Amino acid sequence: MNSHCNVLARTSHASFVAKIPLLPGKAGRATAKDDASAKQSNLLAKAEWLLGLLLTAIVVSLLVARTFHAGALWRDECAVVQLAQMPTVGDIAHNFQHEAFPPLFPLIVRGYITVFGSTDAALRFFGFCVGCLVVGAFWISARLFGNNLPLLGLALLSLNTTFFVWGTTIRGYGLGSAMIVLVFGYVGSLLLRTRRRHIIAAALVCIFAVQILLYNSVLLVAIGAAVLCILLVERRSRQAIVVAAICTLALVFLLPYTPAYLRARDWNILVRGWPTSYSLWKHFEVALGNPGYSIPALWYAIAVGLIGLFTFRLYKNREAKPPSQLIWFGLLTSIFAIIGCYGFLRVLSYTTSAWYYLAFTCVIAAALATGALVLAPFADWSAITERQTNVDVAARTVAAQAAPSDLIVVVPWQFGIPFNSYYRGSAPWMTIPNISDHRVHRYNLIKAKMISTHPIDDLIEAIRTTLASRNRVWFVGGLNLPRPEEGPMILPPAPASRFQWDNRAYTASWWQQLSVFSVEHAVKVDAVPLSLPQSTRINELEQTSLALVQGWH
Image (cartoon, rainbow, N blue to C red):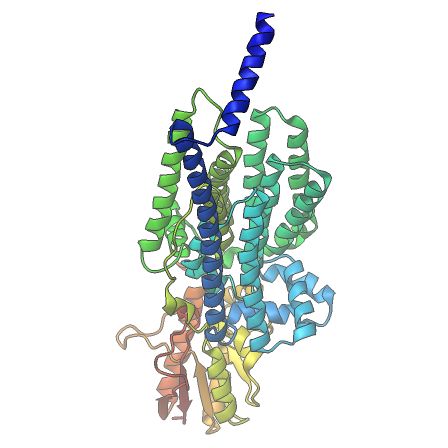
């Protein structure tokens, strides 16, 4: 009876409280505080979306600027385009190992050219579309983890000139970076959901990513290892088997390329070096973006700040629920990616450049973006508006001015790839050294010249014959004259010299010998200006000059 009365009393009291107006007491203040908190949260969400859209607009506008300022294709891009335009798909399959990507990427370029053409404008638009795909990949990856926005990733992209310059070239680095960001999103999201459609999507993305960029296989292993660690700690063995199977399947699809890459070991000693930990790290800092050391310092500050926040959360929640899986995923991915990429580059032993780190940088940016926000400054405008090459200008200049009986000498030999793409003149041309194929990077032919006892006799005879016939020799790349007291550098067949297999040293030696020979026998030597505005900035990797040698004595 007493219990029944107590229940009636509590019910009556609750009903009474519900009917009376809310008085300015504790309850009123609590409700007002909740409303203010909800409004503040809604305002913050809108501000985040506004910032995300603003950052996206900034990145896209910088991509547009890069598209209009990049100019002609440089040698690496010309090599991919000429590989893609080989007569048959079988030719692509036979020659793909001379470039840095599995056959799928040149096949994609081939399909694009079939539809849109091979003009510089069309191919620069291809690069713009790839840049937009990278931006889209960051959005998709962030949304796969819930209602997150890729503010940090977009901010870091907007100040990364490596992305704008090298991610938009006609190479596989940009598209490969977009795919590895999607791999990060789809494989990482398996921590949250493992429906069949998510598993199938993750498998397809992983397979496609490693087929575009071989380097992605290392990053895939790092991402997969991070997910496996978390799943095994949580004793989710079934999901761990699924992730391991996806990663293994993607790597198995690379096995058919093994024979071609093994054959390449015969000549790629010419591009291998002896990278140290310090040199790899310094090149990575360059890849983080310009200007100077300010951008790498920002990356370091973000990483240290996130580690500090992660440690603080571990301490605060030591007796409560553990930190989010996504924070662990981002941290472990960063650690495994650094270890894996370092090991890969040491084993590869290539002399690295900024574009080697683009996919790795995008993965780290995506990993950092899972835990923090940052406002992005503008990127280095001068790098974004930099022209990719001026070999096209040199090719058009000699095509317009050289007579059919003149001789054109292109140096270094790598410049023969873009020259082959842009030259439409009637005068014959050769590279230093003279090789038979300028469609792709034929290091195997260069190696044959390096071990030859008479690697430039054909060039000396061609220059002698041309000048003695009162015709002219055009040096695309200019002349390389040593100091008079030193004389030209002469090297024995490789690897007997101190430079061993350094093809750049041998090219410089041959260049000096031919320059000295030409100047000693010429009547007149002139520098020929290239018609570009004086303020035009050109990428130092492919900035050439033009010299004219004529007469004989």
